[in-house]
Image 1: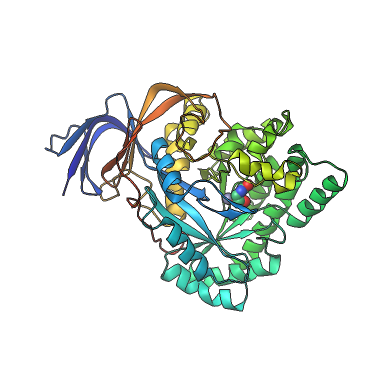
Image 2 (image 1 turned 30 degrees about the vertical axis):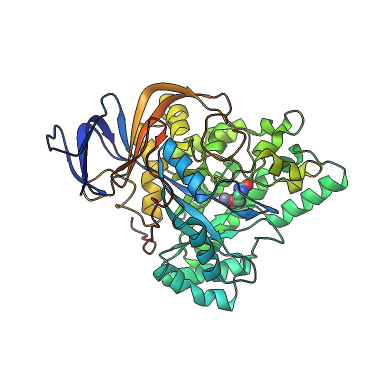
Length: 462
Ligand code: URP
Ligand code: ZN
Ligand code: ZN
């Protein structure tokens, strides 16, 4: 069994920060201490660096068939890009095709990922057609496939959207078997109406994407799913929350002691809707749903992280190259929705969050790794640096500055929404299950190194 000793770093978890060494045997952390002198096959001097738990991105879409094309990162290219930035595990969405089974979706996602992913991966199951047959599949998906989280889309009418009855009945089933509902919250009918109206008025540019998806659409759907979950008694996680109005619905739910788990994404903290109003077709780069919001929403989201109302910062990594985005050059509603992000989430959250004084180091670890592991049943294997945990560690140099560019990133996408951004702090090396997976920009592991992560039932007491 190979061994690795990482010396002289500052170990940071969601609760502690201390100077120390980490000794790893095989895939696991075996010892933490102030001054370890174990002999090891490899020793890394991490002087001046932080040691963070490997990042977990609980919202990605690799090779997603969507809006007439496929998202442009495979499990191989996408997870490797994640490792470059410090993300060691992802949770991707196995999305049911309407009319097909959930089992078929999961098999299809295993076909895409198994033997290809470089980083570790788990799946959520997205239910787009809940009926008597799919109802019967739920216990097996949880117990056999190790998938406890089930996503419903309240938007994308005519494609992925489910109605409230399906969603409520799914919740009742999840309560019985130990699952959690996760929801894309936008009022699909309202969006559909506004899209049609704009197109009928000849308004076809990317800016009409955001004008067709106002914040109230998201707030209404968030409030609705919170109420349905309350009535069903079902644990509830809202994906990619963007705005103050939706956060208000969460805040209100806490008054009746309802626990609503909330994810936002790094782009909603850092980018705003003015990007849709740039010249030409530039706005297409950030066509995603829900759309980017106003600066006041960014402030509300940062505050909500510190108020423990937002639990995870993911990416919703769903890249499309510009020739794919151009499918919507004459009609904003045909621009494939999504953007790249997995590679820079950890570094951006450090630079814009910790370095700029918006969040503490421990909060940074909590929202980029620990709470996702706890919510989705990966803790304590993932999400922390502790004896017995997987040795997933970011060696992070806070003093290195770098500039984001599509010319140098590893995601399979020909643009970056953060082109030219100066970032303070850089992932120097990423260790995944005891192996140095990326070191100083060099990948040292390849396709198939990533492992599937089956998960336990939802633990309401995590
Ligand atoms: O625009 C987005 N978010 N694309 C990916 C699919 C989804 O809604 O999560
Ligand atoms: Zn979504
Ligand atoms: Zn998504």
